[in-house]
Image (cartoon, rainbow over all chains, first blue to last red; front, top):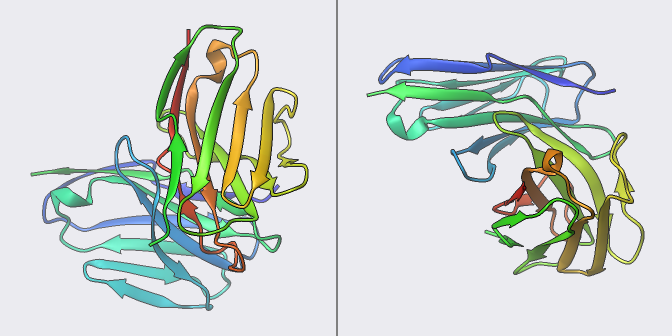
Length: 110
Length: 117
């Protein structure tokens, strides 16, 4: 079936370092969304990318959607301790169902 | 933003008992709600799609007789884990797109942590 692979599974960084997580889908996606889940919490919507090659920024976060609409990345510049959590990419299939990537858990050392 | 609530937030039950989890959309109507389960340090796995006024659609490998879903109104969907066993212990999360909106916009409930002894 349709899958969204996300790497790395875990990332430990020193505060101030950059962080990137990557997602790759087995099929073309209609759009991709990114969510953040804090420990013990529920996923919170960050952003949605729809267009091929789209790049969006939210302060220190940069989101990209690949030209083929099969891959995406989230880059955080100069991480802070508040960035700790698990980041999920979520692909939207042509049937409308959400397909979650495995998530990347980010730890930031102060 | 739109709010989705879940009740209870935590439940501990004995093996063999049934547990009902409620998912409510508080300030919008939802003809469709989704139920996910999440094992520790793993991603969310879609279990089923709950449809108001009709039968739920279950994902492959999910037993519909074990996980009963009822979507009786436009603001409430319930998931009942019947004859629960320790392997059913998990974090159950619901989500809902606002009625008339696309499934691209979904609001997640806070989740219910089920522990089966």
